[in-house]
Image 1 (cartoon, rainbow, N blue to C red):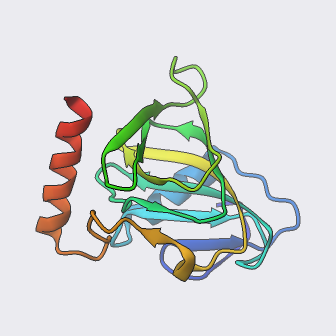
Image 2 (cartoon, rainbow, N blue to C red):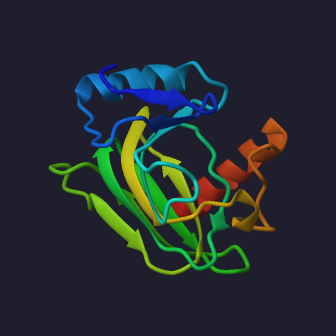
Length: 175
């Protein structure tokens, strides 16, 4: 990997360069790192730290990753696909699906960019073996300000509960 970074957790890296560039070899290295951690995901933060006013991250998720439906009050976020297919699902406050969209990289025939301009409950579902996307949101990031949907399991729930929710959500999306 040609990137210079510091590893904060098994899932979070911060670049140590003033100017960050990422190439295919870096993406391959990030996927390898993601494949070896418990939740099979990793993010490279290109911003200096959690207090920064603008957060830009290159995120890698494996198929089957669970992102609990959540929202970030007072924030917007956008996704720009690099590789793979990713469902973005938007919910109302009661947990009903309001909309969903499958994103893909440029040239896939699918939308490759999505911006969620208001604080809405949403989840991301990887639809390919690996998804790689660029996420931009406003900071600072404070985990305690993120609101996990009360009608969905948190990501540390028992595996059976996560699987049951994923199956139910997939049926709703297909139906």
